[in-house]
Length: 340
Image 1 (tube, helix red, strand yellow):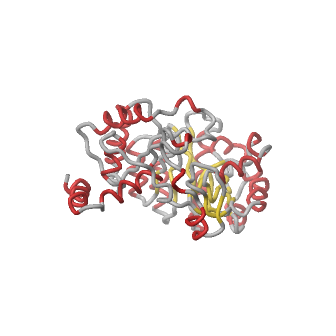
Image 2 (cartoon, helix red, strand yellow):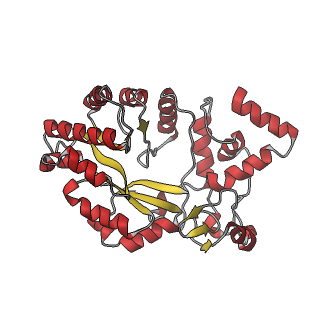
Image 3 (cartoon, helix red, strand yellow):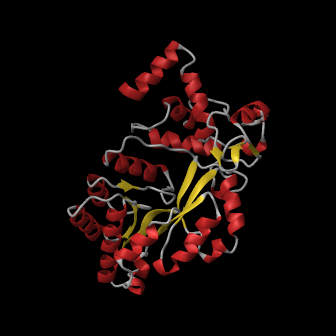
């Protein structure tokens, strides 16, 4: 199941079409959404959205842009609001020195207040930080000295130093939708950077021009995708949470057909047919999904919507099956994964 862990369903351009927004999210395979609070004084609106939809949860907190407006928010108030069963986090709070919409002292005061609430409730703190690496890291380290608290550095665009210091404190770093790249050199640089953080493994998948995507022209077609990944992987090795055969496929070294049933997706609407990139309906049970979906109608050359797809959800499964199809291929896959 996919979870959208950071959205703002109370923002006007989304709240005005909330049913359509949630419908599109569900059709895309999103099973749970967390709508993030940016003002404690507007929390009632965020909470009402979460209460109205079984698959929507929320946080409570003050964005650093709004810190100066909410200096009267108390720790007891934050903790009380966080007791609501739909609240799953504190924030987003932190420091934003790019815009400086609130005085930095007010941002820091609000940030520490939210840290205290996260420590007291045990709920994770969603941290917004921009161009404030040293102060963010220093506050996190100082406050952790008073007692640990869970946190995530959300939508991370800062430097390696902040990431390393945050990870050392037991926090998480979120590389989200902003981690997209114009060319192979940028992608290689990011892989080097992420690997240097000591992460367990990377995952990569090419963008796919699925029917509901609003901007079709920026997706790569198959041949351009293969050319891109040949440049990315040329002479370099990183630890990926992928079958090495799938990585070969991305470079055009292997040709595969999609296995559309390889990664079945379940949400509150049921089992999605055939994959989370399409909206061909839902099955009530897994048995119904497998028995009644016309699987052989999907895939490149079978369905025009699949023409340029090389996404992991369909092709990783094929690569794994291929890797286990003979002792020689299994050995090659193991060697490529663990020995190289």
